[in-house]
Length: 144
Image (tube, rainbow, N blue to C red; front, top):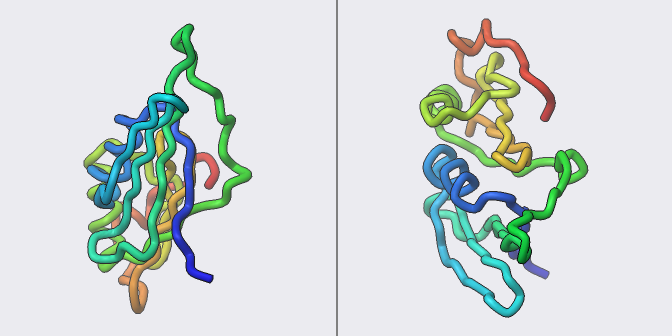
């Protein structure tokens, strides 16, 4: 048995790509459009690690322009990525307008949420970084 990918349904493909690619830093590996089924699949991975992929599934709006509501996505859990510098990673996300819902006050762990409310955990690779501002003083926001 081999792990292939995790599928996440998204309501707005462009907003999701801005989050996962532009802000989080994943790379798009491949994309396929399925007109008969009215959906698009986009496969993403961390740079240099195609073994752990995220499949974004975008179901096209119906004939009335309505997009399916997937709820809060709390039942999904989270995606997790190791990062080389959690402070720099969180700053990059902030610079892209992403809310840090659980800041890396401990220099080890942070959480953000995608436009579709999927929780993404960031973990410092190796030893935790020294606690630093603005993270130490930043409160938790919402849930993850």
